Amino acid sequence: MVKSQGRLQFFVFFLCLLLPMISLADVPTWQIVPNESHLTFTATQNNAPVTGEFKKFSGDIHFDPDQLNASHVKITVDVNSISDPYHQLSDTLITPDWFDTKDFPKAVFQSNHFTKTGDKTYQAEGTLTLRNITLPITLSFTQEQYTPTQARIKGTATLKRTPFHVGQGEWSDTKAVKDEVTINFEITAVKK
Amino acid sequence: MRLGNSLVQYGAVAVIVHWVMAVLLIGLLALGLYMVTLPVSLEKLKLYGWHKEYGMLALFLAVFRVFWRLGSITPHLALPTLEKVAARLVHWAFYGFMFALPLTGWLMSSSAGLPVSFFGLVVLPDLVAPNEHYMNLYKDLHKWLGYALIATIALHTAAALKHHFINKDNILRRMLSW
Image (cartoon, rainbow over all chains, first blue to last red; front, side):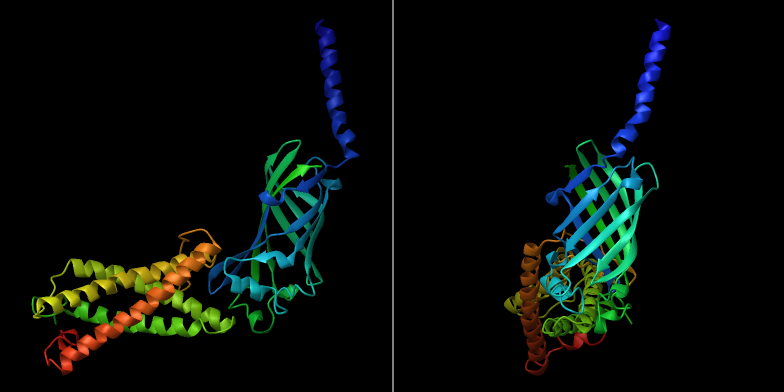
């Protein structure tokens, strides 16, 4: 009796070892829940933070914390959805000196290189394409909730605006408007 | 030299704070009226930054001034009752403006998602969350308070000059020396 129970335990254990191999074939696809997802940026002007939001973005997310090698994401941001409580600011940011949304309506982040940095923290190395300029960028994020059907992450990235030609002419003065811009995101997604 | 007020005269602190704030508030009004007419540019944002910083300085001075005033005696005002009431009303209206203007400005900045830096030393905490509707409300309040302050300064100045040149009394002079 004792012996057969031991065998059963071993068998279950063996099956568990196989589990990741089963799911390897299929990295789950996630669908962003727009109402519970936010993408904001914070720049620094006159030593004070200036924050705005991109209201619309979509994602092609294939992510599994157990299969980081097979995970890949592509986030497309509708740059025209830039929004700020101070209208004059967002009206300025869509002009050619800044995001030039008429010629460059989309910004794209892509990554297929994920690293686990802590218990629930990850890094995604990838590229950001903004104003048709593609440069490397690294995102850090924390998994706040992860169930088989729903996930919630919160993360941040820092980038420099001038290499993307965001803020031209007099605005390229990085003493007046700092070069470093912080991106913050909160994404809730459901498994497709 | 006397720092505090006496029953007949204002002291150095009251006189100096009066004139420092006079220059500061008139400067802020002029700057405010000018900067809003500019198109969005680095220049405009720089002036907004100054307006916010000096506005906060005015708020701190107002806090100091109100404590100084509450802890001081006020020189006797030799005027008919009605004029005395009018003068005191205008004085307290100024105290109202000294707080209401910077506070609505601060609320405006917070609700616009544009926090206030204090001369690069510290970024002031936001009083409210960003909200476009409230931003417009605070903006209108700030604007009309500004216009009302201009009218009150005009009234106050006219009264001081009337006392000096028409009544030929010492009302203006006692704010000029201590």
